[in-house]
Amino acid sequence: MIELLANNPDLFVGIAALLGLIAGSFLNVVIHRLPIMIEREWQEQCDWLEGRTPGVQPAYNLVVPRSACPECGHVIRWYENVPIVSWLLLRGRCASCRTRISLRYPLVEAMTGMAFAGAAWHWGLDLHTIAAWCMLAMLIALAFIDLDTQLLPDNLTLPLAWMGLLVNLDGLITPLDQAVIGAVAGYLSLWLVYQLFKQITGKEGMGFGDFKLLAALGAWLGWKLLLPVVMIASVSGALAGLTLMILAGHARAKPIPFGPWLTLGGLVGLFWGRELLNYWLG
Image (tube, helix red, strand yellow):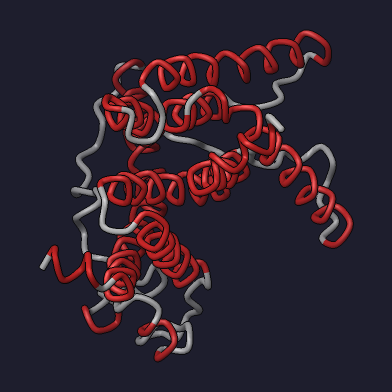
């Protein structure tokens, strides 16, 4: 099978796209449920600190209960959960109560499928591809969670950082020393910006999750790519903010999550990091 895939790159890209669609379906569960799980954990900790006995709640994690319509409770059957296809056949509505199903679900599946296929095409049948799949899946989950909740959970950012260091033990993407420096510099750079902004304005310009996400990107890509990644994130985030203010009346005082734009910079750095460095260094 390995020889077959190695000799037929188009087949490998197609299988990667299929795996990405399946992974994207699971990422939708992570994006929806992980913030709720964290909120429940916070509530339990508050109850414990205040001496209250927390109520017994049914199990809720990434596996149970089965996915169901939030409006009518209709349990989603397997053939209603086929990535993209089911959403199209159901015309974006619940099979039972006809409540609209967000376009985000097929969007996440399509993005993950394209990202997996792009990695397979870019690196072929290689450990680099498998590592890239892991990184891309976690970045997509973090981006959409941040869009929904303005949170970048430690449950994802910290494992992503450790995974980047492990992947680079033998310099798979960048030398280990550059990965370690990248992790430290990624965290400290945004932390310093945060402290400076707070001292000048008295306000918090970003969350601590952004520091950890950039540290994770530094662990994966190395310190040399940190500045291009931050520049891509800053420019794209600023353009998105201006567009929202002009077209959607977004209030200037209302914060815009920075995580999705950091993930965009990380994605560009992962696929075209060498070209970026060559251009950056002339």
